[in-house]
Image (cartoon, rainbow, N blue to C red; front, side):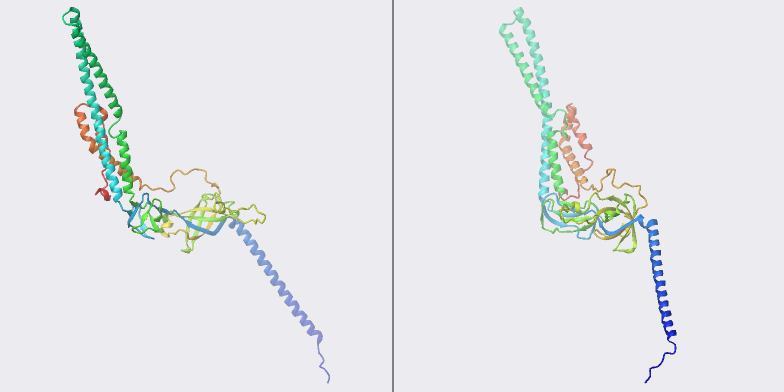
Length: 435
């Protein structure tokens, strides 16, 4: 049996070669197109980087931070009331914890009584000075009388009208009057030295007793723990009936309207970063639809590892270089925080605009005002001063009137009005120990 004969073998071979050339042409076209796309993408990326991208630095290693104000007692005591719990909003000055005030009330009452007693004793010192001056005046009059008697008898003795014995008695009376006057003047100096150049309110004994009243008042007020700032309560650990000691953390107050962001940038990203540059931030809590605006407030002075409890020791043979990160503090717009409040610890995406490089790398001026402060404790001191002034006035006004009526020294006369002028405020009627 004979095999079939190919009628046109050359034509089939040409077709196969043609198909191969077409495939090669398409492959080359695809390769050229791919190379072209890559080149165009590289050119586009380069243009974007030099025109836009190099002026922005971003990181997602950023977290919300803020002040955590610890509430700690200043005196020991037993908790009798808790005024707020976790996540509650509290205002500055609001009562958070109350301690049993019984012991503090007793100590304050004792200090008040001691101050009143001291004021009355000092009043007695001023009266003693007045009596000593009167005694000196009497002794001076007696001395003048003795001198006149002695001079008269001396003339009579020269003419023989009186005996020498009577002249001797007159001389002895003169010496006795001189001694009595000297003793009275010495007593006046001693009593006057105790109260000289002072008023009742400024006398050292009164000031020492007033300091004890102030300390007792503060301890009494410190049985009520108030919120130093407005914010939200967190980390409450205190329980009713618990015996607490000074410095024991009871709870914390977090003012969420004063938070900031700590963004940890690589050291290679900080070359053009400056204080004051604008920042755009997004939070995972609200998503990309909510953007926060802020500015660079400060660049850290050291990496996290440098301030860690156990700093890295790189002086070893197997050291490997690792790019370090530096914390950058970013201040946020308070108005945006009011609309979309953030919580401490939330993660943020941060992008810094590097166009404006006029700001410094590190701060060059010290702060002109306190970074964070409260005045709730100053009010306690003012109330204590008012109480002290009232006690001094109540226990020295009668002495002032007496001395003025007798024409006494001006230093005593100033005590009453000076104290009265400073007692515009009286005891706080809202405090449990001053009902």
